[in-house]
Amino acid sequence: DITITVHPSSYLKGFSLEKTLEGHGMPTVLVVNGEHVEELYEACRATVVVDGPSAVVCKRSMAPGITGVEGTSQGHDAVAPQSAIPYLESRGHMQAAAYLKLETVKTSDPRQYVGIGAKDAMRKVVGQTVVDVLSTMTPQERKESVMVIDSDLGGSTNFNKIQAAYPEIYVQSGVMERGNFAAAAGFGMHPDKQGVFSTFAAFLEMCCSEITMARLNRSNVFSHFSHSGVDDMADNTCHFGINNMFADNGLEDGYETKLYFPCDPLQAAKVVTRTFPLKGAGFENKGLRFVFTTRSKTPILLKEDGSELYGDGYEFVPGKDEVLREGTDGYIVSFGDAVYRCLDAVESLKKEGINVGLIFN
Image (tube, rainbow, N blue to C red; front, side, top):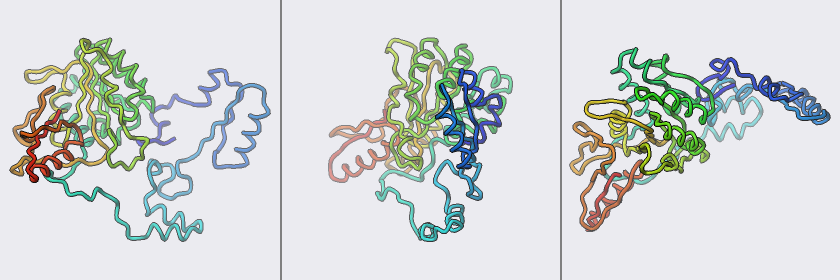
């Protein structure tokens, strides 16, 4: 009963796994405490000897017995040393506890990249910028035209900032991306409304059918897919989002689908400012719009004179390629977090007399 967000039982109060199974005709459903081995064994044995289908539902706390972690989302990731060390010592694992006390340095990319400034998390910028845009609307406009549907990942996609600012338009709907995207698309079928959806990019491909139906129904949906790509990530390789292009699975002459993968935090804010509102100063945003960000922080890109590339005066224009560095010997075309690495390569090649340019696509 724990996710990154909080306890599902607190906001999905009508859901019961055992009642759901019984409703599907499961004749034998046994509910046990998963930490009581004898009780668990007895239940498992009962399901083996019974005639027909049966199920054992094991209910237990997250990270049982670890003080400060049990029953919280802190057990979702690696347990922090301040909680892990006392737990290991209490169970007699002194060598393991001693290992965690070693002076270790977190691994990081050793390369010093050229043409970059300080780093920031694009996923956090996206969440905050959506809040900033919503703040320009009246309460009635927000309530009537925007519905944000969360798949228990608002804390990671940073859409929990929307929940904190405007809970009246925020729906906690549990871990069911396909249903949640379809619900967002249903709300956005009206030309003056839009659904807002977010999850990890690794889960995008499971929504392809719903994306197709949303496109056919000319729905307005703004989506944020964080944890895109294969960059430095604390959440393990199961979160790598490598099939982002699956989102654009419609015909070229059909209802538009826009994919945006900003290359630095400042540009991410400008992308959301331009693509999130249904209507703005001299523009409209209709259809499906997908913004991708990485799990890891991304550096600010700099101009050749050292100023911010996407600072004051920059405006994002959808569909327009941007020349970040001029070249005469060829060009590198890139997007997303690969751009700052390409910029480093371009600057290094220029020093070697190879005048290569860089284009953000």
